[in-house]
Amino acid sequence: MAPPAQLHYIGIITRPHGILGEIKVKVPPEYLRALEDIKRVYLRLPGIDSPAPYKIRGHRLHQEAVLLKFVKVVTRNDSEALRGAEVLIDLADLPALPPGEYYSYQLVGLKVVAEDGTALGQVNEVLATGSNDVYVVRKPNDGELLLPAISSVIRNIDLQAKTMTVVIPPGLEDEAGAENGPDV
Image: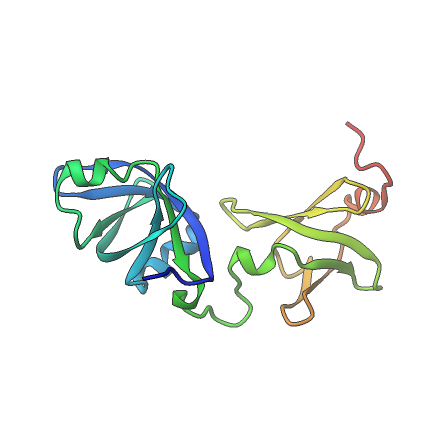
């Protein structure tokens, strides 16, 4: 069975947990809720290019990670063999988010523009912080702009047009307009 074309990396298996085949996976917070609905993931084992499907029997949160239990992984030795594997999901299996919420993969690559239409760059990365995400915008001159994901800054996200309209917060105006990025 060939894997789906829309696989997306969400984490890596760090180690076995216990003796009954559970594995510990470091996963960004945005996918923790999604794992409640997903019935299978794909694992790409170290040194093997083709990911293989694994049916999820159960999951639970544990120390800022998730413990997964797969149908055919029943011993610690079984789970040890999966150490270091990349965990991928089929994008078609991701549950829809409420309006105004986005998965980070949807945001990376969006063109970022100010409300006046000035091009500021492109979303390069989404950093998950405790209070709100931060969008790392790669500016055309190779500098970076860090924008908090709050409604006073992020005015509109249009996935169809692949744009994010923003208002630069006070104190970042110079950084947004600087030709060589911020002084260090």
